[in-house]
Amino acid sequence: FYDWTRNNNQGAMFENYVAMELKTLTEMWEDSGEGNFKLFFIRDRDGRETDFLVTREDEPWLLAEAKVSRSEIAYHHKRHRTVLGNIPFIQIVMEKNVAEKLKPGIFQMSASRLFG
Image 1 (cartoon, rainbow, N blue to C red):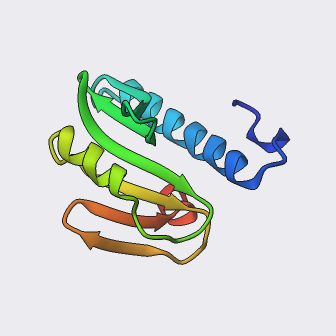
Image 2 (image 1 turned 180 degrees about the vertical axis):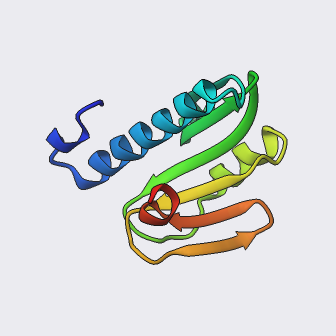
């Protein structure tokens, strides 16, 4: 997990990279006094998963999914978002030059733009 470069699967490697970036951000926000942030993943009873859930003050704050390339947002991510109070959802992609607002509260963006 911490050494994401040692994984040979491109998708898994990218997901671990995104995890480390989000973990770094949540720690930075906490250290700067922005609040209490935690990083989780979520999975429904049918096994459909969203890679990352960021909470702020123990409340759902942001959902994120890591993908190698731009793609349609899977329905279960939208469903998770709705169940959690319509918090923002962002699909973070390895593909460069992506910055899209697909619907209110639903985004797709390149990791290089988001974390750059």
